[in-house]
Image: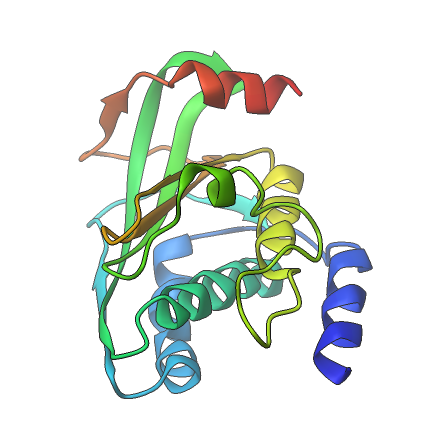
Length: 193
């Protein structure tokens, strides 16, 4: 009951004060907390670029995204395993909103994965596949990403793990290492809906 109430409050709570922050620095500082939350049976791997640029977001809300994605990755691998967090500057071939420059935050696991029907429902409030889940983790992730002006991409197959990619608009330039990619049509539809 307490977890459900806390999740509802988090879901309804407005964002704090956004600031221009480096998501790689915030992630590096949050890793000890995340590792404690997910447990010692999980190899937490972090890949960050030398240069990144900044994102306008509330730091606490961003760490909530990392925590929810890390716990989901943990829960999909009951026997333990690697959880990879990758952060990188990316540039889209299309302009989304006011920019084509984003910071990618990717959390990947080698866990149970999801079928298509499950993947299509994960942003529904209270939908969960966990015995003790509240069904609010992924809706909170989507709310935070949406409010920052970003978008999400999720790749998953049963038995092949899950990869969640959050794209946040970059407000500072990157001096190198930017990867260019084309946005799949379903992501353009998500941003326009």
